[in-house]
Structure formats: structure tokens, C-alpha cells
Length: 170
Length: 170
DNA sequence: AGTATATGTCAGTGTTGTTGACATTCCAAG
DNA sequence: CTTGGAATGTCAACAACACTGACATATACT
Image 1 (cartoon, each protein chain N blue to C red):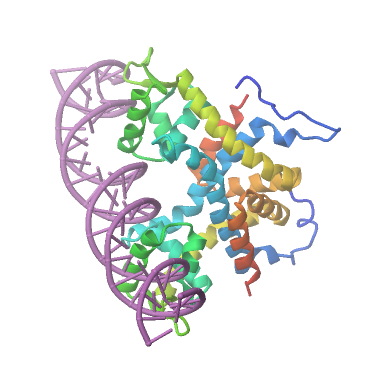
Image 2 (image 1 turned 135 degrees about the vertical axis):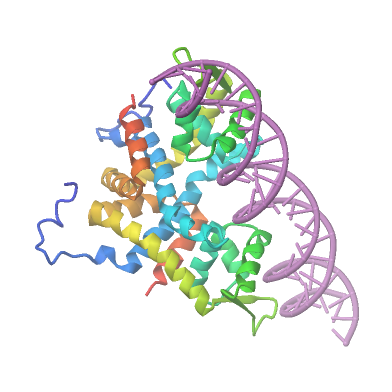
């Protein structure tokens, strides 16, 4: 690409932060940062014969106890078959409990057992520790910007799921 | 210091942005945003019998033409066997060229062919379009904060690789 | 000559995504 | 009430892509 600056400034605004070079740096920053983001939980999980998919399931079940499989499916964005394999092992290992719905018996409501909560705690502690350090080093204004950009980067449905979860927070 | 306000406050700083709830929101924002981040290239690639691994290889070969296999290995953080599978198909399909090193004949230097450059362009156009929209919606200050936090979130070695790439930019 | 380095390859395994088939349950139209 | 469709969840088989381990080849260094 000979042209490093396909977006030209218009109407007097300074749009230097939208050059292709800036965008590329943003892309690479996302790539490298996400690796760091998942590194600590991955290390813990690899000792337990679990993977990132288990982490995600445990995280969101903890986040919304009693959620249905279908609900979790929409949040995680995978097929029900894929999620089911993960859930099955978690249930077999006694980390997750699946209760038949009372009003609709087709539904299964998911909960973490004590062991499940312990694992979730361990994983999220590690991930939060890194996030806390990054946030502290960057400062509150940078954190606000970080979240603004991330929200703008989400797909429509994902932004909806995210804000719904966010606003249900304590 | 990027942050002009928090330092002016005395030692009783406002650290509300470091609560567990804020950190959890940051974690979920990363999760959902990364899905959006990879969604567009993934769609393109699924039509081509390629995957995310091919995208990453093509991206960094384009970014640093003539890079060696070992170099790419370190950047991507995968095993040589895993990278080799990807490189082999890309070379077979005429998207990547592998040239024996002149000073050290053990090394293979990697380049994109014209077809490879075309694919890279297609993929990065899609990804940049989303990044551009997110950046534009968020504004320059948010973008600065976004990058500050991401850099703080990387592992040491990855931050090194990232800044080395970043500062070699045109 | 002998060791270290860079790369490539083969075989096996594990996680996680996919599709297809199917069982169960609910609900609504006849 | 029965029947058919929709929703929900489970099981089986397969593909992508990561991993480890072992080994081969060519080259570089000492």
C-alpha cells in the first residue's frame, strides 16, 4: 500500500488518528493485547484439562446464575452442540449444575456449584489482576477511552448483550 | 503522563475505575469486542478454505516482507509445526514466496506474491473499515486511551514485538 | 570434526468449532 | 384431544488448528 493515509482530512478537522497506519497499529495492538488478556487463565486451565471455552462458560454462568442454555448460546456465539460438549464435562466434573425449568421443562437452568465458583474465582482473579495493572498504569481517562472504542468495535447484537450484562451489574 | 487529572489529586486518589465491577466490565468488553474485531476477516476467509491462522501469517508477512520463519514464529507465538502447516498451503496456493537467505542459507525469507498481497488487502480493508468506524465514533482521545490500555495489557515480549513493529512503520 | 541453529516433516493428541440426526417438550390449529 | 410444528437440548461424526515428540536436512560456527 503506497498510500499510508487514505483518509484525508476534511472540513478542517484533524483526522490524523484515522490514517491507515494508525488503524494498522490499532489492529496489531488488539492482536497482541488479546494474547496477554487470555494468557493467565489459559495457563491455569491447561493444568486442568480445560480450555478457553470452559472459562467462558463458567464466567457467564457465574455472571447470570440460572441462565438457560439458549441464553448462554447467544452470548457466547457458538453452536449449541459446541457449548454442550463443554457443559457436559463441567457437569460431569461437578462444577456446573443443570436444573430442568419449572415453567418450561424444555429449558435447563445453569448454576455453578461450590467447586465451580472456586474455579471461576481463581480464573477471574488472575484475569482481573492483569486488567487492574493495565488500568492502573494507564489511568482513568485512558480506561474510559479504552471502553468507548471497544464498545464501538462490537457487532450490534454483541453490544446489546454487553450493555444488558453491564447494566445488570451490582 | 497521559493523564492530567489523577496525579493532581492527592494520595487519596479516586480509584473507582479499579473496582472489581469495572474490571469485570473491561474483561467482558474485551471479549465481545474481539469477536467483532475478527468477524469480518473470518467471513471472507471461510469462503476461501482459509482460517484465522492464514490471516495472521499473511498480515505479518505483509507487514515485514522478507521476515524469516523463526521471526514469524516469535511474533505469532505458535509452534513451527503449526505455522508450517499454514505456510505450506499458502506457498502451494501461490500466495507466499519462500526465498533462501543470501547471507545465511538456512533461513527462509517470506514474501507475499501479487495474489497474496491482493488477499491481504481484502482482509485488512475489511478489518480497517471496522476499526476506522470505531475510532471515528470514539474520537481521538478515546483512541489514545484505547491504545494505552492495550499496550499495558500485553506481555513483556509481546509489547516489545509490538513496539518494534509499530516504530518501524512507514 | 563436532556442535549448534534454522527449517521442514511425520505421527499422535486435545480443544473447539462445525453439521446432521434425533429426543423431548410446549403450544396452537384443527 | 390430537396432531404437527417450533423450541430446546443431546449424541455422533468431522474439520481446523493448536500442541508435543521425534527425526531429517542443510548450514553455520568453533
